[in-house]
Image (cartoon, rainbow, N blue to C red; front, side):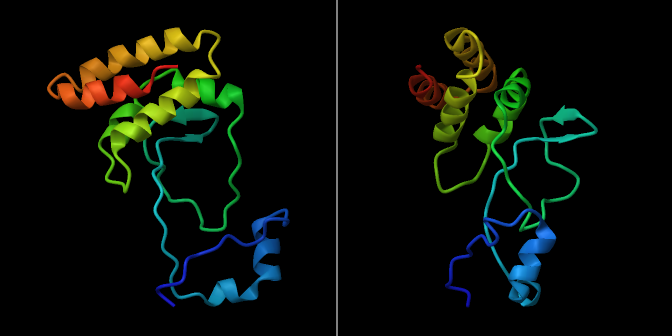
Length: 141
């Protein structure tokens, strides 16, 4: 049914195989559609600020990143360009500001992190003062 919203299955399962065993109809689904913005991935214990070579499986497990993982990801601002150029139902400026506010919380000095992010944003948005002002106004801690 194209009008039906997808729902995640297997909240209490321990792996993908258990999800498909508990919900065998998942193997027969014709189409499930959702939108996500991937801003990075890790492979071979190395962090990358670009799309992975293959998309995640639809019933892959998702977990919150640890503060250490967030700090490692946020050390580079390479993800900002991807966020600022995203075509999503929400303004990309809001997305970038929300990500920066969240990431800043895991750094010893959140304000210093946001100042550094602001400098990077000034470089990325140097020809678009209104967008720069929109993001900077929203990243205040």
